[in-house]
Every structure is written in structure tokens, then in C-alpha cells.
Length: 239
Image 1 (cartoon, rainbow, N blue to C red):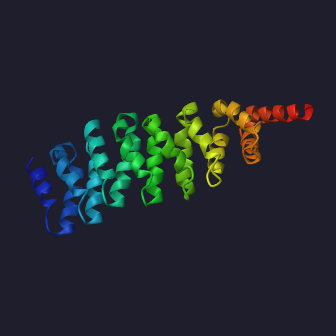
Image 2: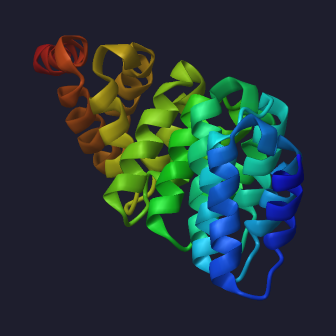
Image 3: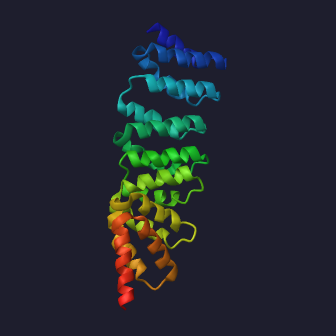
């Protein structure tokens, strides 16, 4: 369509205002603007934030094939511009399991300088059905100084079930991170029943610090954890 070609060309105009308007106008055209998708993806790299965001918004609106959408989101995650990275991370999370190929980019994004983007990366890892390779970096993200990031990592780890057990137990050895790991077990509650036996074993061990941490954690885990804690204490009373 002539209009699509003209607007795609306008995305390279010297005037940032013209480029922004062109990106927004393509969004209003809808499906006929699909041939301009690559030009819009290029516009995500524009130095002007208004152009970047208009291009992202239009790509959101276009009826793109999932493969194309994932590809553009992956490009966005590697952008030097935070607004574009945020768009890409959100989009990957929305696409879900069909965006599994973006896992390495999401793991890398857990180290983004902006907390909001680290949080989005953790959320997305929990939604795409990430592989076990994502468990250690998510476990480390529990110790993030930002509570939003830590909570998102907790939720994401919960999707792995007992596969997340060892990385979480390893954190109990860290003075600066054990409490986050304990929080995971507490939030999962009954769903983390796979963690009760290892925590009981820790509770019966020789290390006083680890016994205290295990006891506190079991107490957070609802009836199953509290029952296990009571049983160990009863055993000690009998001894």
C-alpha cells in the first residue's frame, strides 16, 4: 500500500516528530501496515524515546505471527534503551511458552541495571516454562536488593517444584541470602512439601545456625512443616 510505504520511509525522516507520527500512524492502519514491521523494529533503535515507544506500541497492535513477535521482542531485550527492553520483556512474558527460545536473554536480563526490568525478566522466566538452567540465576535473584525482583524470582522458582530444591538449600549456607530462600518455602507452603525432609535433615544436623534456619523455615510452611518441626522437637525431648 502506498500509505504504508510512505510512512515506513518517514520513519527515517530527520525530524523526530515526523518519525514518531509515522510510527503511530502505522499502528492506526492495522494489518495493511504489516510490510512495515521490519522498519518499525529498526525504529526501536531510534535515539529519540518517543519514536522508540511509538514503534513498540505499533508492533504491539499489528497482527504479527508469533515467531515474528518473539523475534522482535528478543531484539528489544538487547536494546541499549530501557523503555524498549521493558517492552520486549513484557511481550515475552505475555507470549509465554512459545517464547522459550528467549530464555538466555531473560537470564541475562536478571542483571539489568534497572530493578523494574530485572523483575520483568524473572516474571517472564516463570511464564515461558524455562529450563532447569534458569534455576541458579533465579535463586540468586532472590537476594536482589529490590523486593519486587526478589518476589518475582520466588514465584518463578515455584514453577520448578522440587527441581529448585538444591539451589534453595545451598542458599541456607549464605548469611546474606538464606532468609530469601526461607521465604520461598514459606510462600509455597504445602506446595513445597518436597522440601520438608531435607529441612528436617538440616534441623537434625550439627550446625546450630543451620538448625535455627531450618526450624524457622519449617514453621512458615503451614501444617506439614509445623508437624515435622514438632516431631523433631518431641524426639529430642525423648532423648
